[in-house]
Structure formats: structure tokens, C-alpha cells
Length: 506
Image (cartoon, rainbow, N blue to C red):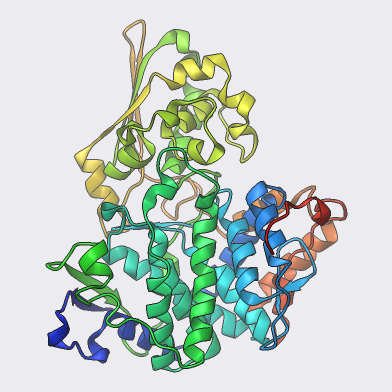
């Protein structure tokens, strides 16, 4: 049974015992040698494939080109053989592989998600854990156990502790979860993992401005930085270096000054000793390259495109009102009060956080594409801009309630759309979850993950390399020590031009 842990702020004179601190309890979960179930192992393989899919599709996007160039200036270190970077064969230091691969995985906003009190992309745990595993020569089973821990900790923190309410970026839960996963991977003791978690949290708290207004390329770098810090924190802790304690509960700690303050109270669920880690099963991936709350709306827009083609022409439409959850309205909807979300010259990062834009394009096209749907000429099309500016969102209390529900059967990320035509007709439809969601119309299974990989790798990776990678991923539990390099993917000849990378300091 999962145990719920009460977390609050303590004054220094209260001297909270180490074993009662949240970071220590997380470390104990990470150090628990419990076996990983078959269903979790299968899902870990799915997410390794999923991460590789979106990383390959990003290989020549500017943030990845820059991050890869930085990584290539930091060769393998003496503690191991180094780690691989997606697309190329060169080895680099593990923290820099975590950096480059983390950027590649996040850039298209196209991998897995978990939403509760906070938001997260738990697949961001995989690049740093895999980088360390490759560096030290871990086995496939070691990697599976480390990834299962990373997901377990991040999902449980996300269930309990809201960051965005205080404008703290969600990667503050990623630093500790990745550090915990690395601890499991390496079989570190509780004290070492505890110190690593504290350092990782302390160095990865930042504001949400990276996801507000004119969204910059840092959006993809933020989780990669958290993963890099987790690797470095593990290294320092292994060398005996300590962290601020209590990092969560201290009177000058994260909760007291960045979150709910001195009177804060949280209930954090964590597995009990010997309980299998299965939180990855509560997470869900994306069929479309867009912010997760947009997934269901793309699917609904595609449906309406076929059923009511008249709504694709702004000349027929008076207004489009989307009734949805608090988060969708205030973060990616008109409730954000970001004029950039309605700008045809906005950055791709901004457009993938604009539900008015995404719904409009999916409605008109009856499809969604990770490149074409964001193209500047697509965003600037006059009929699109006209219809786009007729789309507004509003919070609906019932959809907000379902969004926050911990009951997987009623938890929802969609809402209701009301399209009013100029002739007075009204078209109303709704959707609760994306088609690819476990409870959706077409849930993702291994076949869909493999198809996503093949689709995104086409033209970028040679066919024999695609088949080699998929076979290696399927064999992950059997991969022996030193064989995890097989999870890297080499781009086809001519796809990557390392000489064209931008120059920097390193």
C-alpha cells in the first residue's frame, strides 16, 4: 500500500529528524531493491522508444544543434567510458549527454505527460538516467529500475505539490526525481541519494517565465538543465558533499519561501518498502506535437472537420467558445492574457501553448503535423488568422474538477466547444481525453509507439538503423553490462552537419 506522508515547514529549533524529511523518504524509496513488474518493464520500453522518436525528429532544430555542439566539447571523463548523444557516434561526459539529449527529447513538446496538482513530462527522467547508465556500463535491468524510480518520484510529487500556483517551473520536481532514479540505477545508499536529491532540488528551482508570454528556446533547455544538475548532484554526493537540510521543510527552504509558505501542508504518497514502483502506468504520451492539454482538442477538431466542414470557413462562424479546465484556460487559453497566443508571427514555442491557434488549424486541416502545423506561412494564412481570433476560452468548474480528480476513470483534459454560426445555428460537442489516452478512442500500445518512431525517423535514419534500434529497445531487459549504447540512434549520412553548429565559449 502507498503511504501518505505529511509534509510541512519546521522552524530550525524544531530540528526535524533526517528520517522524517521528505528528501530522506524519497531516498529510501529509491534505495529499495524491489523488483520491477512486467507491465512496468513493458511501459519503460515504450517510453524509451517514444523519447527516441521525438529526439530524432528534432535533430536539426536550433536548440538541439546548439546543445549538441556544447556537449561535444566535453569528452568522456575518467569515471567511465562516456555517454552517447542522439544522432551521432561520439561519446561525451554523462552530464553533457543528459543535457543534449534532454533538449532533443523536450524540444517538440511531443513525449509523455502527467498532470495533477502540478504538470510534468516524466520522460524527461530518461536522458540523465540513461546517460549515467551508458557511462558506467549498467545493464538493461539496472536502467529499467532507475527509470521506474524516476517516474515514481516525479509522479508522486506532481500529485501532491503544486508549483505553478507560485510561478515556479515544474522542473523543480524533475531534479529530485532524476537524482533518485540515478541513485537506484547505481545502487547508492540512502544517505548518498538523500544528499543528491537535496542538491538537485536546490539547483533546479526557477520561475515559470520560461512558459509565459513570448516563449523562448529555453523551454526545451529547462528540463535538460534539471537532468544535468541531477547527474552533477549525484557525483558530488558520491564524493561526500552534502546538501541544504531540510531542503523541503526548512524555515528558509523551498516550501517556506517558494511555495505555500510557513503554514504549508502537503500529503505526499510514496510506495512502502517492498512495494513495486508502478507510477509510470498513470502517465500518458502524446499523439500530437503540442502541449498536452491541446491533445484532446486536436482530436475533437479533427472530428468536427469531418462532420461540420462549414466551420472551417471564418465567413460562416460568429464565435468559437471553448469551455475547459482552469489550467487550459489560464495557461494555454485566452485566460493567459498573452497577446502572443493570437499572433501569426509568434514563435513555435508560443503557438504550441496556444489552444486558440491549435484548435483553429486542426479544425481547418482535419490533421496535425509536428512541422507543417507550426510553419510561419501556415500561421499567417489570412482565413486562419480570422477564424483564430474568433476562438476564446473560459473556465468551466466541472471540467476543472475532473482535471484535478485522482480517479483515473473521470480525470479529464478536454472540455466542451460551442461554435455559433452566423446563421444562428449552434454546434456543441465535447471530449474528455485524447484519443491516445489509456481511456481514449485509440489508446497507445507498443504498435503505436513503434509507428510513431518509424514516422518521425523516416528520412532521418537509415531503415536498417531503425530496425536495429527497435530490436535493441525490445530486448532492453536482456541487455548486458555495457550494451546500453545500443539505445542510441545514428542519423543517416548527411543529416547532421557538425561543422555548421554555432560557435560559443567552450
